[in-house]
Image (cartoon, rainbow, N blue to C red):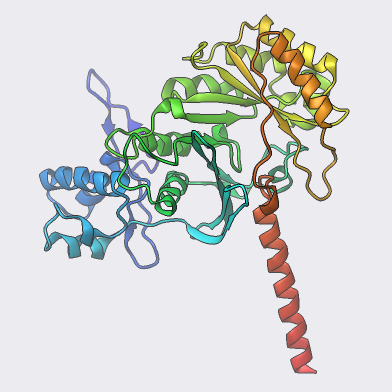
Length: 401
């Protein structure tokens, strides 16, 4: 049996048949329904010996309750009979990520340190603004790209997050913000950016599965126009992301020359700037209404000169890109090899790009009082854990003495 959540091709003019993926039971023997599509839910029910016709109906009901109403227990599901609810309770569970730490900044930014069932930590961040609220979602535990300015890049890649762990971040945020049932208007959480820990395109299938649930009109119901996937430039996967997921694209550019980008974004040695920008030009759905966002972290004396700004303009024009440039003041962290560009330098850089007719807003730093750099919550937690372990060891030695 195939274990991946993909389709098994069958010879001839027949639609591919979905193959059930292996659903790993928890320690209590129950199956977690979080992260499952309608088809996955139906298969989970059929595997538990429910009649196929019943399974199809129940899967539709469960999908609505899980993703539209935010239910975590079966007893609230009013259109499922009281005799059926205990049957579901015995076999299934609807989980949420474990919260290790939650912080709220003076500017309203919220940060969560979350833990997987196998004991790995990852983060998510919610940034409220006057007209929108953006959830920054992680796709991996750690990261493999080693971008030199990025704090998460100093951590080793532990593993990919599952679809359940990715969509679970959105569910948890909705819980905290009190935004069930799903509704198109009046929500605080209006936008999602795949800009947390990890490179989303190195975890393509799980990210795709999670975002399909987020965009499903019967479920979380968030428009694809309000979702942005950020990549450091995994060129071979970019077209696939446009075709199969279809959300907005953001690219971590951060430099305009091979020498500097090779240094600060090592992936550039594999997929260079020209190859990356051509992939941006070819990205399905990119147009003036759906511009590609270039993220550009401002590093003093490294990538922030007037000539860098002019070269950025030249490249965007050369590839005829419908583009917006987000200028990001560098968020220093202990041991970082770079400094933040001065506000004057950032303004001058922005003015050159704006004068060329390309939007180049300066992103306002948020949540600095609660460790704004991606990865800092996890690092602070690890430091504290080590300190606690040292203290415990010392206490044992004193007790023995």
